[in-house]
Length: 114
Length: 114
Image 1 (cartoon, each protein chain N blue to C red):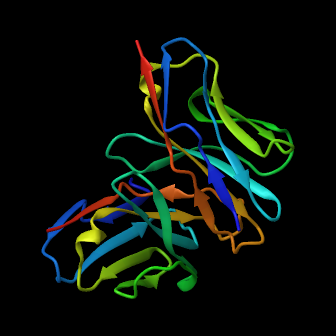
Image 2 (cartoon, each protein chain N blue to C red; image 1 turned 135 degrees about the vertical axis):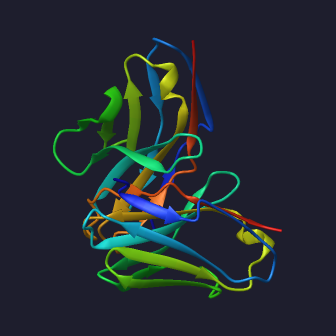
């Protein structure tokens, strides 16, 4: 069983479109995250939810909107896609939110904006 | 503010030789330090972490890391490298004064040659 899964694995779309990436975890964790990994492999946190409540919101354009329908799901919706949004997006989860918790990452979604 | 530095973009070692991947950090409060590994086209996998206690932490796949508070370092080590250890390695720090947000280093690509 996959612990943290993301769909789709690849997403190719045109500038200006709106797209969503879905994430699900079956670990029973309370906290979920979205990270962006750019072409240089740098990894930056975007958002974090704990028990469906937003707790981290980094300086991300408001075209990016996370939605957590329940503790096991954290989806990422992106409006008006731009070339610079091309990256690999990783979802992750952890048991809870203390600083000591290990994060478990999904396989990533490679987004290409043309 | 917290930060992590991985001073080497690339580390090359011969199979069977010891390897070290360096990491230094800066935090305001107590540091919680993590190492993750990313294989090509995969998500990050947890290797080990330091929370408190013994400065030498042992993790998955024979890796270990030593927490050095005076040098603010958390270098990853392995006594005998394998070709299969070739991957991208990330050091991450969390600080309990910063809402549990993780800051990742820029990554170090480890190449082990037969």
